[in-house]
Amino acid sequence: MPVESLTKEITTIDEYGFEFRPSYHWLPERTEDEIERLETNQLLYRERIKSGRKFPKECSQERLAEYNRIRALKDFLEKKELEPTALQRLLKLSVTNRINEMEANLKNDVYIFPDLALSGQITLFYAWPNTGKTIFFLKFLRDAITQGLIQSEDVIYINADDSYKGLLTKAKLARELGFNMISPQEAGVTHQQILENLDAISKDKEADNKVIIIDTLKKFADMMSKRSQADLYEVFRRFIAKGGTVIIAGHANKHKADGKLVYEGTSDTMNDVDCVYSIYRMSDPQDETQIVEFRREKDRGDVIPKVSYKYQKTRYIGYMNMLDSITRMDSSEVTQIATDTRNRELKEKYEAEILFVSGQLKEIGSMNQSALQTALKTDPDLSSEITARSLKTALKNLTDLVWTAKRGEKNALIYSLVGAEADQYRKVSRGE
Image (cartoon, rainbow, N blue to C red; front, top):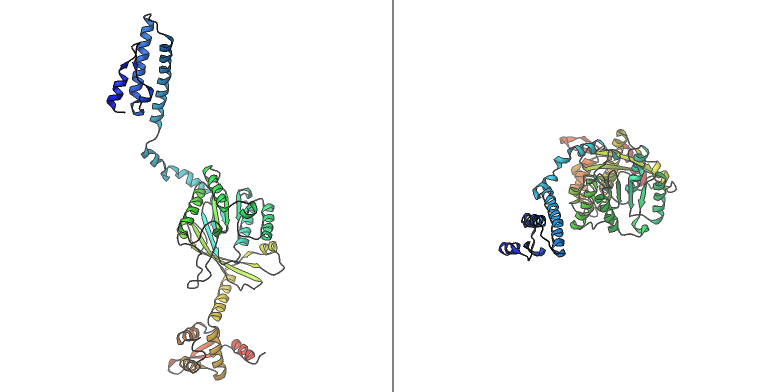
């Protein structure tokens, strides 16, 4: 309503001589004017009563209503004055207001997983299927609980990628240690409902010291959708902002890039999490002793760059015995395993070149690179499988592993089979 119209209504005098206007003409920004009008009526009313004037009941009731309205309007003004401005609300969000709280939180930093996953962070572990992510998660949780680093009742393990039998085995361990394990399928809830509950925990300020394990990530988001993953990590980020911890199991693509695992998902994930480890199987999948290596790819804290573990995996060992067998490897073991793994991978990569060169050296005894290249050209069956470049690389990388090399005439390298390899080749060639 225009100010002129409002003023006109305020100056209207009723039949008893009091200022009058309908309440629906009141505007919040004119509260002080409204209070002044009502107080003028109150003062006038008291003066007239003292002078002996009588008013009908409805007039007295109107004055009482005005008195109550004055109190309500003054309360309104008081609350309005206390309400922070937009600038004050923004400045209240400054992290500098909570430095003491943050320092207190950091003093309570603990390793949920030894040297790998810190409390108050989002940590992602990814690997190929059947590398052992879940069994290591359970091993690390058990150690943290039994060592008193975390309280078992604070752990909620979301097992969304397990068979019914596997779930039962792990649920028994959870019950024994006292932590909670939830399978969305078994509980009859959707993954979205799990996330909604997780978000509600944050809003209710119940996330402090809680540890959420997500196994596995692909059950909770579309791994090819940036929007889907962004929404998921917003939930996780709100959770850790309230004092919680999130640890995630993810998958790697089937194919490596330059010998390294590739995360199965969008690149944005690396920006959304605090710490990332890739897990490499360093042994043959059929070996009874399985060896895995955790390699750090991103960190925001004092976490280890690389660490290796081993465990026993046989047909009849049983899951709990397999978990009990997990041990951390020392540096000397790791060095030897790394050497053995590299040698095995080299032999697998250059299998065709090894067979060709070994066959030539077995017949001739020793040859230089030029002679081997010439022999390769005369064998059309191998030209599509072995190139001059791959042969040259194999000769270099497998020296002292499959064959030896020493300088001969004109400083050329002369290659001969290593003793053990030569004996092995002779046995194979004789069918022994």
